[in-house]
Image: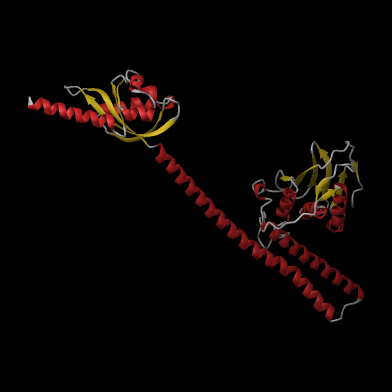
Length: 392
């Protein structure tokens, strides 16, 4: 009698442990039908015991994971351990949860496996924490790489800046010494002054670019906003570039709609945008090539398009074209000068006017096209484009 009471107490204790366990404890028969379902199973999966018992275990298994049950049961039949198997199950409301699954065989008195007992622990929060930690680690890795890249670009920029400053300074100093010796005739003196003036302008442009990018980085860029006539802006910018283009043997062409609606902006900064794009196109276009600037109304925007027949842009470099300090060729032996700031300044100025700028090129030797879009300030009646005289 005492033995039976002890057995009954043990059974009751085991039943209580199962019922009040923090983990879901579920049993099923050999065909996969649920035979027991504790309180934590109700809490974790959302089904009550009445709703679950008698139903197939696929009640909580997503369709794409149903093959796992056969695999697990085969391992049980082969006396292999299934311990802390991490998988995904489906709640009554359809949401998916991550669980850690431990499976044990249920045997009859003859030792034959007639079912399985499963202990399922909800590890959804742990998985979220792991995913968050993984994302944080990835972000840190990206930040580290970005910092390294920024340092590399800074070092390259400083080396380039030093080189770009030294080149015109050396020319200015050299010709100034020659002039001070008063050994040149009038014609050579005039040529020397021209060289000094050209290199001084080059230095001025470098300094202005550095100051502009510094203002942009510091958030101190100021715009003197007013109604702006873009045809005037474009003609003025192209006229400024014309002597340099003529010296390089590059033809400039403008196609401007004179009645394009005005835009709201800073005329000097918008002229700087056009000047930078046209000057850049001239710099990378060989003798005999052509640079075209177009202005037209496109729906609710005004579009400025600068295209050239120059060397083109490597498709792999296009995504980095408007980044500060980035140049396709950053070596000091490259055949074209510059700090790699011009296009970055263009993007910042265009975006500060509420517009956008994009570049396209089919690769080496195919030329490049830059497209600036600016919102119109007022609506004018459409007019037909007027082609202006090409500069030789």
